[in-house]
Image (cartoon, rainbow, N blue to C red; front, side, top):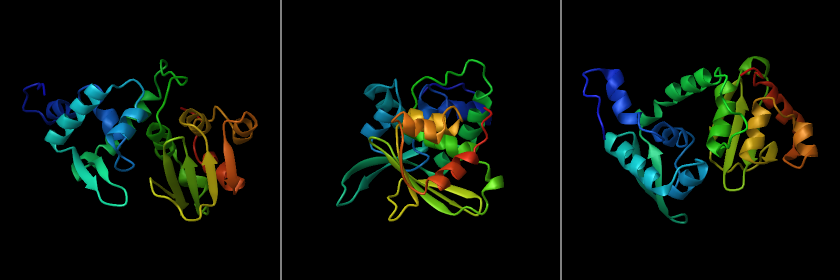
Length: 213
């Protein structure tokens, strides 16, 4: 790992997470552990060699750790350490800063974790403090659970037993719904979104996301 060689905490932080793709690996682990193949699939443009290198570097630095899943689902997953999870606030601030860029390409590819995190980072509880609902968001290879209660929003990779609404879509469509570039009726009419359950609750959830970038 290259180093700036400075006795400065900011420089040292960039020694740890300043390499290309490093923060995006962290971003895609914020919502829970993932297998190598899931990480690779979720980040358009990365290749297996670079991903493996970044994971090794982040693991050596204490940001990421490996854990073996037990039966019935076996295999190795990567997850953030407690110190690594503290980077969520950094990533959220970078996202807010980046949204102000006139060169942000909203038509580019986006992964599932980035799309769902956009909802969590933009969520404004002001008008939905009375909303209590559980949503399942299903993409081709990923599923997330969104729980809203008392103005708080929680996102996990769990499997809900009885969600109030199920959204089946793709990451780009979900991102467009979150940013207000697409409405639920438009997405359904175009065949890009299927909603089962309480559609009004879905509308309320998305209404709690400011449209402005």
